[in-house]
Length: 463
Image 1 (cartoon, rainbow, N blue to C red):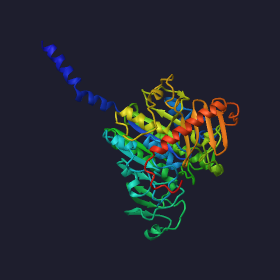
Image 2: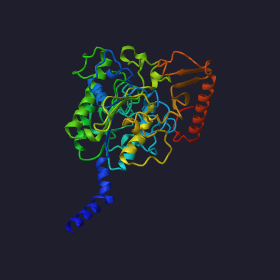
Image 3: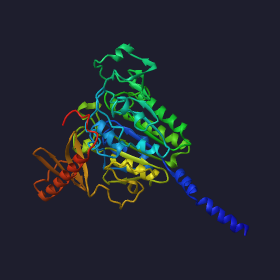
Image 4: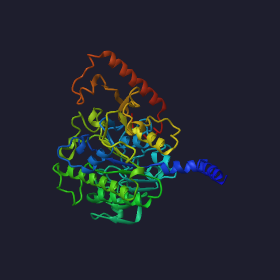
């Protein structure tokens, strides 16, 4: 009788709603997203780089999954970041173009970011690195769901917003003063370093910035090892101007660009090592990818998207298709490779699924890709039927559905079979007119819906 009573008591306690919730809470993963800047499709060893050494990223692919057909939702900086954090095409959320310092634009804090979503699940949240979604107070990370921010608020080739809040303990370099910081003249590539919402260093020493981002990220992980956390580590490199610390400068066979990428690879290794040392590697999903394709016009200071055609700021594959690797020890099958079409817009709904968070009330475009990440290889891309769309500024220029891609710029119509022609060299539009008609209708219908339901457009400069 006592044994039966004990069993009934055990069942009652263990399977009570509170107990089940506790189990679910403990099973929620930490989320780490490493987002690089202008790193091309080929600029990782496991993606075919002949000169850049990335042993940590290569090991990450060995221990996780590599995606060959992963897309950023934009081929330039600000829109790609808006898409990642909101799960929506950037034109839907009012960030179709690159944002510049001291302009009225930014990602509206009426949008739900991954950080906002995870705060509702009691996650600690940190944004470390490049922000580039508006540098006014209401647009900064601390107004978008992040507990902590440390980084450069825009691209590392921009200047400073003279209206920024200044820390009382600011460190001035290169002879700068408070008066000179408050001047409105352009001082290209002299960018500020912010902590929370205050400038703490001006101009920032970019040669040490990758190391400092990494130190901040490691500290955040250690400080929150007993909590659920979301770390968004958005490196400022390898966007030009390029910098590398003394430990990496001159070490790569690919020049300064390679030095910068290899230092980022070191950073990824330090993050993964910290997770393992803290006993967190089996409860942390780590995602590595780039914001868009390489800036090839910068010559040796730009990256490579080979064998893809095109580059940053174009709707050819080289502008949108980027390297992506995901690792979660014990949950993602090691050495997996997927050719499913997925995108940065799919990260938010996937994180929502894994953490039990509610999706945003407003319409988003991304889909849960956990079935693909977790190895159900027969699972089709969630975008196979409806397509993946390539916007440039305000215009929809291309769509991919399955292996087929249609690209229309004014009267220039091009149809490619990406399975047979990854480099987009053979225009098949005249051979398959019905396919062109079908994909064109898909583009028009989607863009019509988006235009009717886009939001937060009031600050845009032009159309």
